[in-house]
Image (spheres, rainbow, N blue to C red):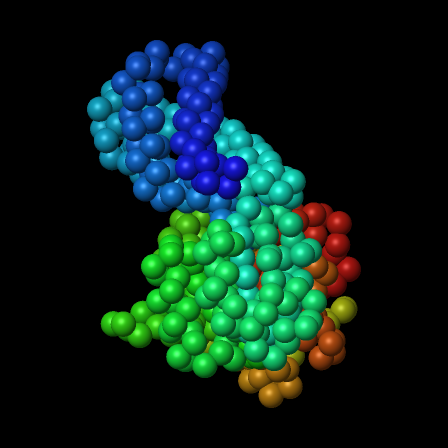
Length: 457
């Protein structure tokens, strides 16, 4: 079943995708017509959607669910593909519409499709893994060369049956009597064709001549060869590769936001979210809070403080002023019952409303909605000397909220353990970013603001 499945699955996936698209589109049309009397949508609209979705889904190879791909990868594909769909529809369909709700309708359809396609694709992903656990849609594999790294990979094959890798054993000169051993390397060339191999994993310890010999042999028999990195390259992160002419190098510290599509997706979310807050909240909040601040104490409405952002670049971070003007704002953190904090400032800090002007920083491009919280320049200089890998948190833009904040590390930093924990959580966020993680953090931030105020002062 391993060959036929590979042949027919992409077609079945795309057909199912299109059926779900049509179902979601039909429901959206019905809801718009029922609630707001949206004009009847023609067959031409469905044709546009089907054609563009087919073009995007097949072109992006959304049907290709890798054996080792986790659920997050499948979910990540959906909003990325829908952004392309909405963009193409905005270019080719909206200009032909006389109805003023064209873009509103398109956004509504996109929201519906996110729900429908997520249910469909997650179901397919889980069913595919279950299918492989049952021993179907498998790939035959052997490992050449035995060391600690290759032994660990063999153990992974045994534990993760959902990968669908049927591990047949090792070929190695020095361990022919060990468990799972199929003999010396010479035996591989004698038996390979009879094993119906799909994958051959090579230990990095093998000499260059043997590796070249196996690669040439594999090219003639159409199975894939992969090299198992040793030692320091066995990191808990994804490795990627760069090509310089005919020469390849391994990128050992790439992060998800190095990808241009991911950066566009995150920036789009930042702009839409911050623009909404600016228009509908800050437009009336700034004058109202400004009057209260001025009424209680002399000084500016905003507290503008230099902080370190992406790549340690300095930017001016905006906050509502919550203290009386003083000379220690950059070097002394606010403490409980701090005499510098005004009455309105105390309310703003407890409710975190003093951070609201930072949505303007997001619009300006200095910050993101979600990311490591920015610290003052003196604090940064101090922590760099005390906390290992502290500077790694500046790989991306700082955020209004972050993973550390929704895990309880909010407010005053009282000891090094707290900042080390923040750095670890910031590092995890940077290495594992996804748009779904951003949405989850935003949701959890609301709970933190409502129910966890003891560290905010």
